[in-house]
View (spheres, helix red, strand yellow):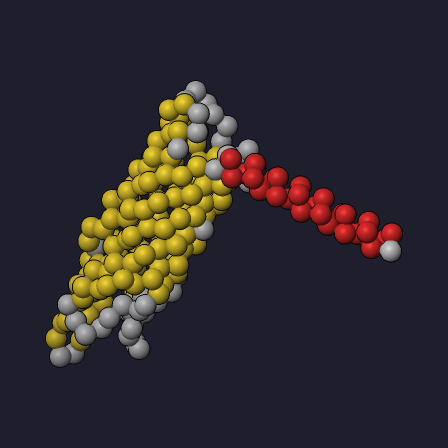
Length: 201
């Protein structure tokens, strides 16, 4: 009986410690808004296609939770516009398709941030996102798939405005890793390259 009471007390104390640790991490968390002008382009696996880029944009909300002094976990959501143009060189003639697809994206990033140097912190951010299609504006019968997965990497810097408040700027590359269109004989990946500008507090 005493052994059971000891085990029960151990679990209670462990839960309290974990709860306190989680609350401390939440106190050190930050939220923010960002916008990212980008260039969209498509990569295909066919030798009989040509691709064109088009402008895109990403905007959203970020929640950043501290794991330790230099590592953070970031999530949130964003609205992103991806796509590009594909020209298929077929025997019967060329077909041109312009893809403009709107997604809601749910990321999960690890952020590695340097110690503060003057007013600046430098960082790298990497991780996957799952993208759910909201609507597509495509000039053919071939539609975008309902979901796609990509991996992004960011390199940038934060400028401190005091306390936890800062502004950030970074370059990013968003690498789509799953086929983005419903086509039995053509795989297409929607990639992005751009600049992210954000405000964290």
